[in-house]
Length: 333
Image (tube, rainbow, N blue to C red; front, side, top):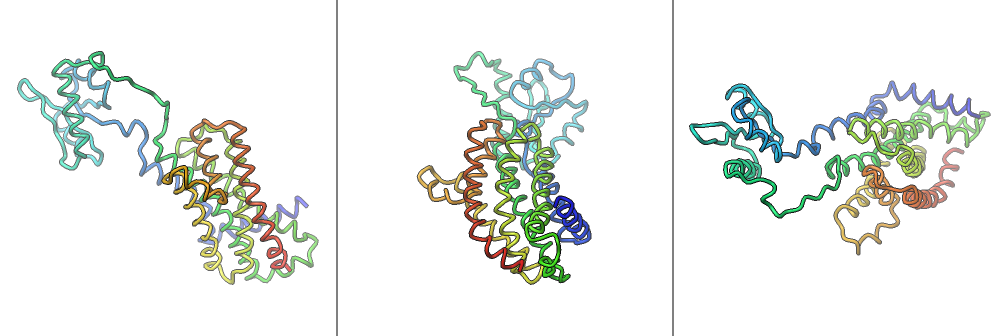
């Protein structure tokens, strides 16, 4: 049975490597990871950047480094070049006995004000000891927005796994090989398992690539894989239905996009709605998968919590599968 499943998977892989749409789906996790890194800052990048002259005033540099990311340059021209780059770095340069701020002109007002304040504090010799404020460290290593994007993309990759299955089944129908499944020793179960392998592998490998590239490589992979696998069951079921009922590739790819609606609903419910509205989304498996992944990405989830969320996702996905199973069997006849 394993050899037959492997043969079905190998055939799907060869076909997908020659098809432009399937090939795009296979590599989209890496593309998503690169885009997330490009358009979301890290914690250090959210710090105000200041550009100063090297060797001008060591005490000033030491003072400002407590409150901002300080870069040193040898000449005023180099400082100007740094200020003119696409980020919001502010130059602080000497003029007679005072200092002035060099800006590009399109920096956020808050960053410019911050640079003015910290430089004024230095000139007034105000230190941290002069304040009665307290600093609390929540030990976050990545900005929350980046974690939200990565979490959402993990769920999206699981849907892409179902889409890939649908495309492969449509291709089988186009080659008139699907109707011969009942005449082969492989059997329906072997065929279903063989077709599911590439979707599951895309979800697993794509997710691992995503979290490694985006800087979440230290999370508990076993917890992440558990949530990912139970979430993929729903995508696999829908992928089979859409593949069996669609007449062409574009129809299959478009039909499985219906899963984007519950995915977005679950994410928006958690991130934007109050507690009193959460109960209206308990039916949504992506809602629970998102909560589980959030704990995993923040490295604060216990196995008990992950098992609970995974169990809920598995239960909902199982109910959906029981509803779709007769249609899948009929489509394979």
